[in-house]
Image (cartoon, rainbow, N blue to C red; front, side):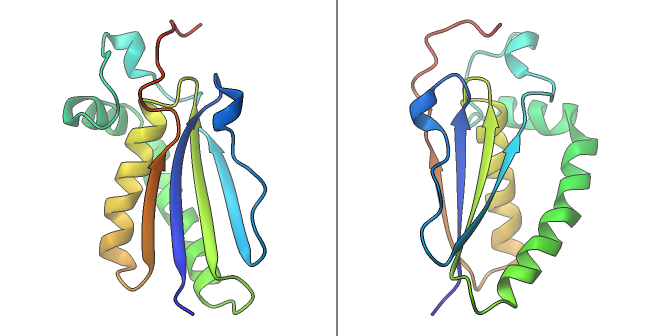
Length: 136
């Protein structure tokens, strides 16, 4: 069976967008990005799908992303070499689920396409369109 990786962005603000327990033969990791610089605090109101917001989020948090890449490489290589698991879910969460987490999911989607082209890949943004609030 072909291996698959699903990337999710979610918002801690929305309890119903929280990661769920994995299905059989699925492993997962949940990454909390709330400690990263928040584009909203710098005047960005668009989602992490917008190029300027994504570029800002990645640039402001460059050290985090450059550290996370080798960590995920180790996990994904272990996943690929393990016959027990068919799917790997990677969840990125921030407060609202529409800027940092979305930018991270999209960043790693592009990275995975280059470095793991044989893995089936999907991305889902669980909180996009739900940001009618002001972060704390």
